[in-house]
Amino acid sequence: MKKATPFRYMNEQIGFYIASGDQELLAQVKKLMSRNGCLGVMDTAGRVQYLIDGSMGSPFAARRIMETADRLLLDRQAQLSPFKRCLGKAVDHVLSKHNLRSELKGYRYLRYMLLLAGDDETCLRPVSKTLYPAAADHFRVKISQVERDIRYAIQQSDFRQTGLTGAAAICRMHDEIVREAERLAEIEMSSTSDHAGGGP
Image (tube, rainbow, N blue to C red; front, side, top):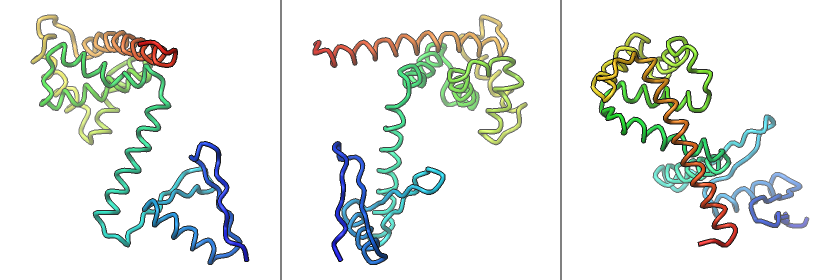
């Protein structure tokens, strides 16, 4: 029998290997595993399942898992719109601008809620019925705990003098975050077009 011959797509990102028997299939899997340390296989639902070579020890396997996860996150990040890529930076900028202390639990809840609202503005209506329960579920705490910790974080910040409620402060920060993310996305897109067009 002939050896399995690889057919490679032009950009070297996709490879097809045809194996006519179990022995050929196992030989090809072994070859790919020895080269990369991991192998992605698509299931019938279209999800990619990764097979990691554990024969080299758990530190090697853990390193391969981390490298694969990092690569997948970077690929997913590259597919996001510029606005969504800049959203995290914008949230951090606005929280820092209002002197919200990052060591407080309320800060973590606020950051999570603002990322959700930045991704889907409908979460803001009403905050107490959407964002507070979402944060409570995510952090596995009671809604009352989320409200209390956010209220405390806001009282310790620049919002103390404004007298805004937690929900009003969240809405104001959301507006600032959207403007900041749009500004950062515009900068990113203009620098990308400058590089693509042969600019400085």
